[in-house]
Image 1 (cartoon, one colour):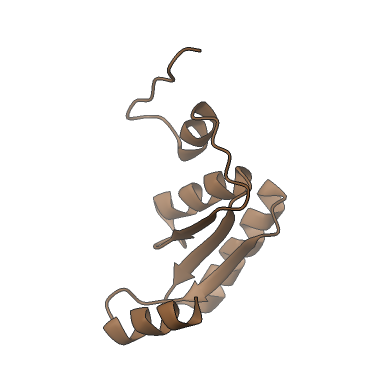
Image 2 (tube, rainbow, N blue to C red):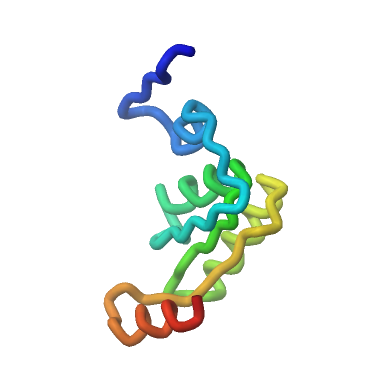
Length: 98
């Protein structure tokens, strides 16, 4: 089997598919997943059937992202949890809920 080649223009989905990642039963926590590259990383991991948890400061914005990822990947194991990485109290609260 040939080793997949990735480059600066490779997408998160191409990397997950290229590595033939089997993520059933795995949990992925993605910070910064309400915009940009974070959304696409969350989408790629969810498409590989990972239980995907996105964190966000704005729970309402995160909920919209979760619904979109569920719809586009068919994976219902996608959820949002509130966390602000600039607040140690928020991080501790996230960890205690997790």
